[in-house]
Image (cartoon, rainbow, N blue to C red; front, side, top):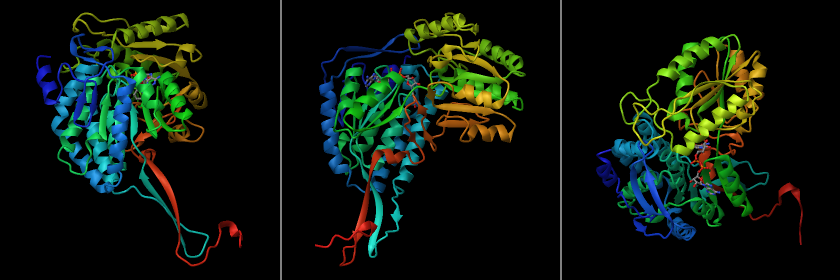
Length: 511
Ligand code: NAD
């Protein structure tokens, strides 16, 4: 990490940054002390004083002001800002990727992949800026034009989780900006530097963009109380919140209490079905990336493998070999595929889940800490495979660590029912050579998740599709497809270009 100082400097950061950034300005804050450490080796990356709910309100007020100017800038021009931002991200891809690795422990390929996701969503948003289409509808009245148009909504509150410290903000920010909305970010307290770096890169572009008010972007680094201020502010018509189910329930209720909109992207408990006709080699590769990639810390991580009973022994044997030999260690080193968990508490949660699984009849392979060949000071774990009965209660919960539960089934309806029998509904997959099984899985009586894949794993979604899930995953959709509609308000316009005043439904009301 010898080049930490220069990386921070390139991204406009210091080892003692301010926790409140509004446009080009930063402000000292009076919250408690935050030490930002690297999960790689526990070293200190930065220290800062956190922001308070009052600071959040200051950022929200500035965003509200910025909105009044930005909403009338033509959308293609707003897209031009995002185009320039995407280009700037291309220049910063390696540097920002390095910061992602240091701050949350991702391997370099995944860290840079996350920045690529930001670039992709910018490209998507630029195209979108010329396509924020409304409908033209046939009026039942003569001489009337009935249309829908989409207008900017207002400042958007964005609350993010630690595990996608740059992409999730970009998913929201790129769409919000082309839709005409400023963004107030409350990032995970475990990844504040990534948040400030993203903001700074956007500011580089805004500085030379005449129509863009600086307060289009702000960052408020704080704990839960700052998140609560964001959720509770009536000046934020939409709060997009990514994180755990308990957080989503709190935010959803706070936003709902003021009848605001929330876009919730919460925990997953993702499963893959492997049928008798599956290409096993392909399945093994997909399972490995989905289950142990990002050290099991993706919302879409594969947690439950539902395999036809005739294949279980062969598949598990192949997986054990890989899980035993996969390279674990410093995520910035070439060849390493599994980096550290985010912190010691995540390691403890993994240990606890494995203990619990044993008590529930599970047969555990792997797991436990790794201390040799890895940097001291980080939490490095061996990925685990747990063969367990489908009725075990542990299967109902998401443990944010590389634990793969293996269950068996005998017929496809049973497999789908096991897959759906959890409170969460984010991502799912089937590996099969049978078109009947694949289509059943994708159909109305199939997977109940927001994402249902065939012959690819549960994680690693493209930005073009709408991303999100059902049930306790929160129901939100962001990123591609028509997710932009979350960030706009719809106005229905009926225009009468006659001298008569016919009423709808043929009502007469003559005075
Ligand atoms: P977390 O819920 O602990 O924290 C997420 C954010 O919410 C943080 O910024 C935190 O400060 C804030 N927060 C916590 N309580 C709050 C409250 N009551 N009001 C307002 N803000 C509050 O989550 P985490 O540990 O950072 O991330 C892991 C979780 O996020 C996992 O459950 C994972 O599945 C989920 N996740 C979901 C998606 C998705 O798109 N569905 C993506 C990434 C992560």
